[in-house]
Length: 550
Image 1 (cartoon, rainbow, N blue to C red):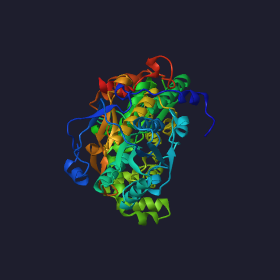
Image 2 (cartoon, rainbow, N blue to C red):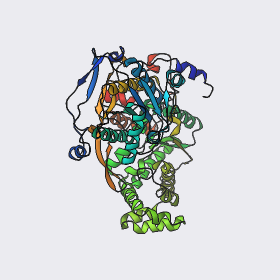
Image 3 (cartoon, rainbow, N blue to C red):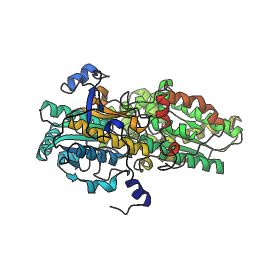
Image 4 (cartoon, helix red, strand yellow):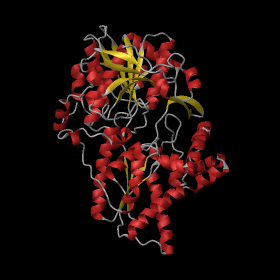
């Protein structure tokens, strides 16, 4: 392992806080809540998950439980990194050992492929110690292998039996936890006696519902991005001659963009869900931004900061229709398209297969954007929106509008720009105190769900706006969050992503103030995450979570 920094050494000594109900270790009992089937497509989901459907959410409350027998648990980190993943593993280990000292924890290396290929190592106290309260997934590595074939499930079963593993914990986002749900169903059908539990991870913040208040990593990542945005705002306000267009992670939802806007108060923020609700065209989005630039120029301020979400292009109705058609088309004609070496010919071939209206839109896009839309798909057959330079597309189009306004004499100013994409910068930071505590509690709770054979559940912690001692640990059945989604031209069960609620308090708070932020300069400079000092700094929650609890 690399030489630890002073902060690394100090963070290793931090003891994450646990809810009061877990402080006495395994001395808890399960309280079953109201029965809950699938919230979306209940009939179809019920048919796909006959053995794990209709389970009730559960809560852990103080109480005497009989002694636990030793249990071997396997753990998998799946998908992209998020701050706090190591603390989930530390929480699982500590909870497991509190239940019985002879229990063992095995880490499958490199993500789900570690399970199917039998790459693992036993995780003991000495190995885990230097990773406590640190960012990254480098303890055991991660991966994006999709578990969807019978031979993969059979291999997982074989390898678990060989190690006497009776429970698996999958730490991941909506797709990773969908993997976990499918595996839980398979093991239950085979009467394998192996419990599968999920843990909600994603910095995008889109894995949440009425029982999962927030996914881990969102708090830390948005604080890192907000620090960077605040630094750029200060630079913009100092130089007073540049517009900074900042694209933030968040393909399927704009939670990161909204949280960072609430924390930093930039001049203009686009929320994808609002674009979809208002059915805005690309031209209308550009006109809105150009209007803000012109109004600030009229006040002598030729600078500003703009936030856009990574997945914006998929929420513009006309672009969404184009991308959907492209996804299906490229899935059906993959061999033919891959066989065309010339990019120009490839664009024309694809345009010729599109419906007339979408073909016209596709041909009207700048060449580089049109080519980015037909690049290699992600593992689910969808366009990789992080590779589409939406920020630059907006700059090109705003420049055209402003030039037209200049020609008409309605705009006098300069539009010099810098574009930024903040993504990987936030995925592996030392977790905030909130995320350090939250992930440790999620892991500890997951170990208890495993001990109590709660298969098909996702570890959950509620009441997160309160002090950690008042948090409420438990589990929510993963089938409850399932719906059907189009993947590779077919409907597949997947945990539903949570979008920004434009009728919710976080968005309403933002919408009430953005008009003032647009014309006047009201930047906030949050600075770096504070791990020590006054609680107002070190225990700060996200604005989103606070407003949602109001």
